[in-house]
Image (cartoon, rainbow, N blue to C red):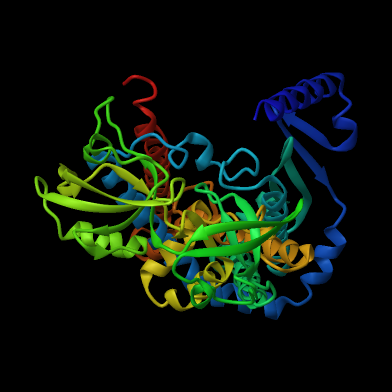
Length: 492
């Protein structure tokens, strides 16, 4: 992050210097602090040609208008719900609640990778602003110029319409609504096409079984187990007692032996204010496997959670563990304590399948999980999931070795994923009824039209006052979402 800050400062000094000398103005550029606006008339002929398909563009705009209003309602409800949750139960400061996470800037937002994020962002802003320009011409409104906004990297684009013509009384209200809404509609269309292609292309990677460390870092791909070539599931190949697995990574092939016992790996011992908890007090160490609780076998996280849900705070239990380092089984007695209303022993457990101390990861499970997303969109929860997906899945970068596929497959998948998600999110965000966002302008025009029959010429003023109030409410709400979780970091 430091190198990015240094590069940004150098860039800022450079454009400030060029701005003061007048060098930027010669090329149609102007800076506002670190923001560089580049205007050009190049591309206007291209816009003119595309606008000839005026019936198609009007049809797309009219068909997409209900989606814009649906997105407006959804996002406004989401803002209110988020405010309620923030005020009622403020979350702890984390990477997810950091100010950087609120910015859709690749390399700054910790969840958006620089390269793939830039590809997605460039496609998004070009599609959005080009659509505005085309609809202006479709509706007979002059476009003065096109341009992009840079802050070291592209953070926006613009189509500069002739505002005198755009807001002229001769221009129909529906024409303005089409112009303002088409950017969002186009983003949604591109997102839909990109996601369709992404889910279709999920059939391209060939999944593999790998061994990873407790953090999920790749150790080696499983190519052979107990003398058998591994081409799919490994459960039937693992036998009781000693097993031999051949792992392959960049340095070659390596043979590892492990004991064929299943369980849940303890990846850490929980402490709070230097207070120790039952597992650590009993002598249980990090790195061992829980194989049973009170005589009931525990072979995965689901079974572990199920058994723990049956227990009560203050209850004494027996925990059976396997120590892969010593290759021995042991039993510990401990008394559970209460945490968040539940029985708690004080351990962090790994989510991966663990056998004999080795974490086995089947990349086919990830593909199956991703392939199931389209079916989930039948329910509102599915849409909330896809909105938040990048917080849990940032694409296939760094995961290529977990598959048996050429690198170009992941270039395709990563590009489609981020083009789809950024277009989707930018479209949704712009639906918010807050001027200067597109949703705010659409709301103002539509609301003004509804009020005209009752208020006449006053409808415009009433509508703009309501739109301003909504804009203030939305932006204060967004500011609260960023500030409230981070007040503890400021000592407040």
